[in-house]
Image (cartoon, rainbow, N blue to C red):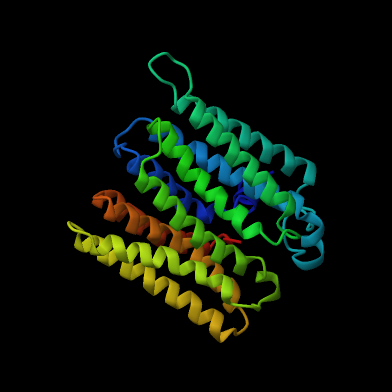
Length: 293
């Protein structure tokens, strides 16, 4: 398997959104940007994401053969066996890296962090196995990103602070709305719009953060960018011209980093928030070269 094919299978254009999820979990749990544990967490949770994307293609190979024959496995560019092997290997290495990141003074990994890492792996596999037929698969997909935040936080702190739980809840609602759209991307049209109401939760939570005492202008800026991104995506869904649904999907994927910027700015982490805004721009740029879906 060559590098170009691996990047395509792993949808690496979306990796910056994983990095900002990690920053939300770790920094809202008390870490700093210079914390050495981030050097373990960022590659570890990147491996979870890429491994999950590999497994998504492997489990979807029959569906892709009928609806997306250009994908690597139905196109004959790589075997399902190879993709399965690499996918599960990356989940295993990711979990080992989480364990290393969570080692305490006694040299032993923190059991909560390891449990969160195992839950993340289980959620990824469950989604990849059943998302085509399971009505609640948007919830499972949302839980995958929630466990990214929770795993990063559990490496840093023995208990999850309230800001981490609220951030995870906001991210979950964003992902439910996003995944509902993505499930129908191959149809290039959308049915009922009511699941998109979940997107109101992170929108309102971000507004609350921006209005709290001590909120910075950066919080308002990040929130305004998030609102503009949602507006752009929802306008495409309402218009429903050819290509509008896929465009809305990749825009909302990148928008996760803007939501993370709101959460970080609202927590008094301006530098991290600016990095998250940059990650949004980087995701959109990379999506031009490597498909985000």
